[in-house]
Image 1: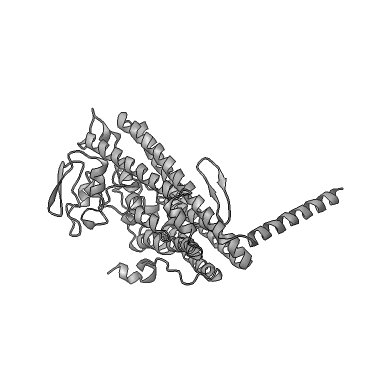
Image 2 (image 1 turned 90 degrees about the horizontal axis):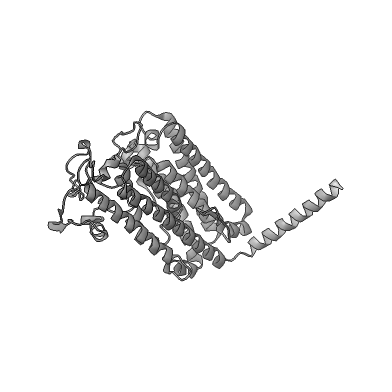
Length: 423
């Protein structure tokens, strides 16, 4: 009887496996592109939901500044980063995302544009006339020789100041402007500790560092803009949205867009600009979430997003698991070994990222890991970089396997020409 049950189970398992293989063999590019759009919509919707929770927490901080409400706002910001970072794989291959992304996730920023800074920050920059403009302290500032009225800090004011003077470091909106307003500067270099902004920076009765009402107005306006911008992207990836319709109508070009996002985020953006550059310079200013010391989580969620774009799997913030037609299905139907290789390398990168995250929570922060004379910390970061580079090579093989022609991936001097970094 036991043997019969085991045999019956084996037959059922074989049948299920055969059915699954056949289903994958029948997967069409159109189904993959549709599911890719559905995942984008879900991820941006989760980003919006978590940003709305952040907005509520910030309203609580402004209404009743305290250690508890500041802590709650910080926790909400960290939670909001999780789904957003998993959307970044939609960059590079989708112009709708690339044209929009700078409003919500631009970095690094010259924080002196926004608020008070430590004297060690300096008072001027040859590259940026607004280096210490301090919008919060000044009701009027000059931009390109013209006086701008900032008496009222509104969403319109912030939008006009974002990348003012066509200088990318003038980041007035988005996650990192909000991060700075919640944590303040991290002046610890590669030593322990994140930013230490006091809750009294928002107090009407115990105001520290001046202009607490204007600081609150800035924080509220920046958060309102983040929510509004995310709403736009939810619409864009909805069933009738422009971004969804564009990618779904593009056939092989749509598949190329998925792999361009995966490869460019893996190589030039994450391995290069966000990780290797900081490691080469041993510079904490090259840390992505530099005020909060949340960089390890941002990098990890980027890697999770890259895998998701390949497997078609995503777990929503409410716990719902999404699956569907994927690039993996298309590759498996053509070359099982290559599919296994791609998934294996994505998993290897995630293992290295999780090791980095574990170290960040138990041993030292990311900015300490990239510090000079920290061989162990440097090695942990380098292993994650190596994983990203290695998986990019397989991404390029996937492009060839699917006969997609030439796909241009983002590069980085940090990886391609390291000597240029020091010039």
